[in-house]
Image (cartoon, rainbow, N blue to C red; front, side, top):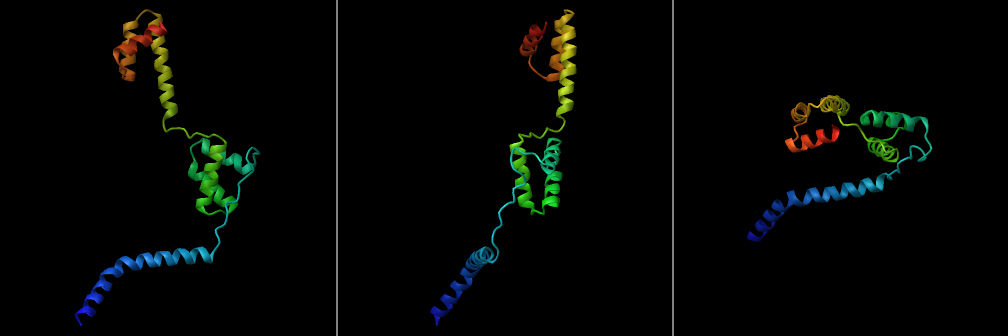
Amino acid sequence: MELVYVLAAAVVIALPFALPRLFAAWRTRRAAAGRPRRAAVPLAIPGRPDGLRMEVASLLSQGGKLEAIRLVRERKGLPLADARIEVETIAREEAIVQPAPGLAATIQRAQEMSEQVRRLAARGRKSDAVKLLREKSGIGLKEAKDLVDRLG
């Protein structure tokens, strides 16, 4: 009788660990047998731009990856995962690099600062140019002095 209790206890203890694995394997086999995995429909032939491909490339260049995926889903009727793969493929093929947020403003500030430093260095006010460069960019004294020397 004690053996029955020990076996029942072992089954009760093992069930929470074994059942999820059994059901997961059963669901995986059933899903694989029930519906065939459909291949992703190519959006367009690489190298031959079409209207949708150009719109997606335009959205990607402006940093609108989500909008590009949404557009592909609407036009092609693809599931989300396939649309994402298509958009990423276009981004790779078109060599589109998404701009970093605030990059344009940073570049503009650097160009303005560069002009101010050049003007100061050209007038012979190298110490003021070094000071401005160090304040705005946070670089060290030696690096700032070397840059100003190269400019002036």
